[in-house]
Figure 1 (cartoon, rainbow, N blue to C red):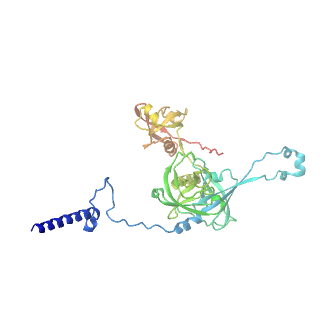
Figure 2: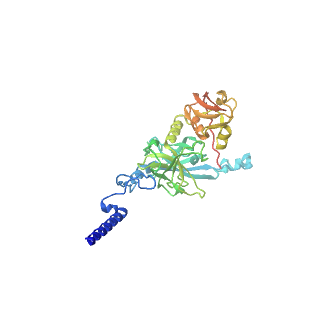
Length: 391
């Protein structure tokens, strides 16, 4: 009897040991799952197996839709040469005539543009057509047409061209479809179309890397789309389109020390480009608000010295005498907190908010003066057009 009891006890012991090992190392053999929350940290796991997203194998439809609307822009400019005093001599001009002076050498440039209207309006960068006295547009179907500058806005680096009619014939132009910025988010697929290095029409692909890029020192007013789609010299003024072929930006600049693409390109959002374009077509220029102040960013050190709760706002470093700000009671040392109910984050944000106001309107301003928060109103003035300085 004792022997049977020992055999039974040993069998139970071995069985319990096997059960312990299996439940610890291979719980699925027993039809069990590890208890939820068994991790050393709280993790969020999907309840069901994720269905893999079906990635597009080709963006041919988007490219086919947008390519005909992107044009090559060829510009030329006459170089101002030093005039020879002999051309002012009547005897010299009598024998050689006015033609002896000649046309002089010319410089040429290239870029890209986007047809945005069947009426022949083209959006491009200001720096593409700056100072050009002759502009030729090459369409994707092989036609070469002349164009004129309708107007430009150096502070946003945008210009509007219009193709002129050829021999009285009505032009049929492929206008691009405009996208909506509210539908654009970081991570969206994007295509950049242009004429890099003059090699011909080219399409590159990437994603939206960031939105609202500013403080780059490229333009006065900055609110760029950042993309890693390859953008190179000659792409300027070309189209940045979404995966459906809709225009979401005008390619403008690259971040590069070598002159080639490093995967950081910037485009002007279509919302801004459209607003500038419509103002130029309507009035020939862009009208922006102005109050006559010089602003400074609030650093952490400044915030501590002023006893401020945070670094939001713009420190008014100077006020132009007789300006709208001066008339509204704004003083140097004030901190501008809000314009027309919209919070001011920094000097660039202040500039954008004021520029968006309509000249002649009276707008509410919220200020911090020492330890007090004040409300005042300012009658917005008109910002004078400024020509961008270029090397």
